[in-house]
Image 1 (cartoon, helix red, strand yellow):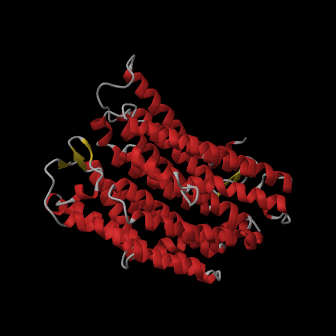
Image 2 (cartoon, rainbow, N blue to C red):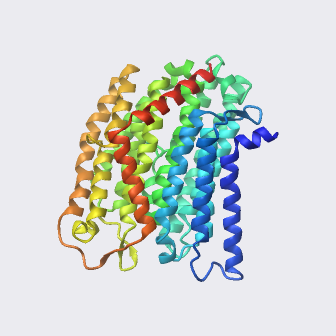
Image 3 (cartoon, rainbow, N blue to C red):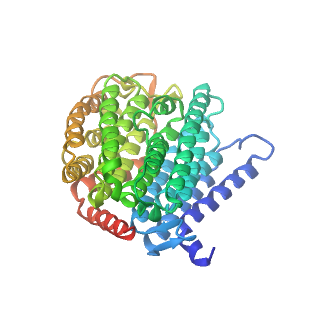
Length: 482
């Protein structure tokens, strides 16, 4: 380990140190109690400062290259994926600022775990070996397990964390066994060396098992069973953050393994991933049609969007890679924005997470209703929004890779999704306000909604600048592994 290695992993180090400091400060403030008696803003501002510093170091540093003997790789691909992960962290901190003291959740633990989960996603994006990928996956997963169960007074939250942990343990076992098989087939854990290996049955079995672990984290069918129950049972800000950061890590890892490292085996994994994409899109959208709980609806929506993202991974090549990177950042903005509006609602002090709870929102908070409509329209992929541009890029990548079936299914399921997304938007624009549901006011949550709205509009109306950035990242990452 050298100073140059530490400089390259600077963003992750900043977040890790900040997580430890926030946790220690919270423990000091709590004294002998389980948690501080009065909410303290230090955890919020300290975490935001760490995310901002990591972002400046990542984007402004312009330091590229391998570290730790090639196990960690900082390149343009890593920078774009880190941007999505840090955006999710920053918005997640802002959105939770009002919820945590209201529901009396431990702020220090929450923010420390959020920062560590972000580190896990960033490590997965920068993985140059299977061991680094496994390490990032475990950091991300264990942080989310605890976050899901962080509401210690809630049986639903504890149940959600336990389900996530048990299912995640099985997925981790598959992932570790896949690494062992791939090492046995190639004699290496380095992704570049594995990419140069000859195809074999042992390598194919390892790839299949590795896919199970990453597919679980990305909530892809048939490894999605945890998502609806965990989304519904976890506290709302945890559900919001989890819904995006898990996908950033999982799909950054999938891109590192398949289109970048194993491009020469595209004939083996391409059809498999395309089939997973098709099944995931169909199941996610059809299941979402019948949901009345907003958290479960967005859970199945997340499963459907994982299917759309898998279209780009299955397509492979630079076009598939950059279309996934673009979609990830768009998904962070529009999905966290949708959850942000829900965080402004409370039913007798509890979460207002039913579709009918949105009734009359346009009369009580017109700006929040307008933002929710924008996020729903973007999630549906309608024109003039970032969601439309992002899906268009994915479908074009599939057609360019001669995979018309995933693209066709993606278009048809997007049409189906219009019904349940616009049903949510219609509920916010019509009806009388339920007396039991209150609309809260919070400046930090409002700032998060403004940022998410600006991101959806900017990436939808002026996508050229970011499109060029992700295209450059995909080309350079593909060239580096050849």
